[in-house]
Image 1 (cartoon, rainbow, N blue to C red):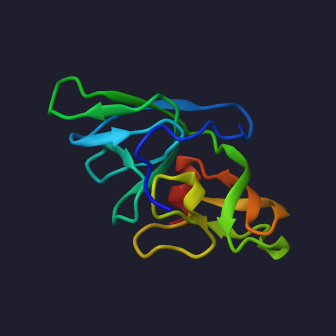
Image 2 (cartoon, rainbow, N blue to C red):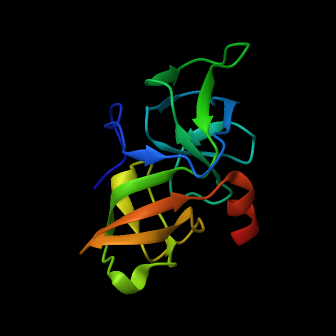
Length: 151
């Protein structure tokens, strides 16, 4: 698959406990889509998740698509669910019953691109918590703190 180019479909998600939401400032020349995976770059701005060195995973974008084209002040803010969302019946390439407990990775901002083997520049963003069928599983995304602890 590829990075999102529009708001993603509403995912069947369940928070892992108390929902935690944060707002992050956007970098310039960036568009963040609703229901996309997002991270923070080394300058502290929220960015679409990608296989890019120094990105730290923070969660799932909540707001409808948002673009920051110019360096404006204050920076556009994006609301992000940082609670460790559970994505039900997620497509996870090569998922089998034995994948329960395995780490999950993604090289794009698209939750449909989840895989069990990692890209080269970023660490895991969650783990399989339930097998549904071949290539389909429930995935719990990491909170920002969990992501930092695993990388």
